[in-house]
Image (cartoon, rainbow, N blue to C red):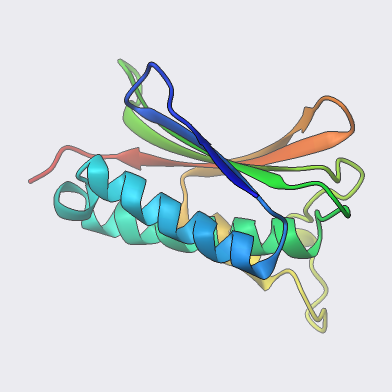
Length: 150
């Protein structure tokens, strides 16, 4: 199941995907296509590749740790501009497991078998976190501040 919803705002894109490895792969392709459509691959190459890694990790987490049988996950990408931060790329992945929140990298045990991806996300983005989503779901988000192109 893959559903893409075109929105009135051309600087926003949402897709609903199956919580499977194939759904995660489709999520990565949708993100690459949308970020390329917005021109980030040529104007902001470092944030472009960082965003692709962040999407890959969050989609993998949604299909591994956030999966419930019969329920999918959602990708939401948006570009916003504010006087304070300039242009910001926001990546959101929502899944149905609001009871399973990601563990901040500082809380990881060195011998832990998982959780390294959040360390990568923490290093690549300017901000990230989680917000609850009704009912009993969560959204994990990451933001990258885009500097003016050279």
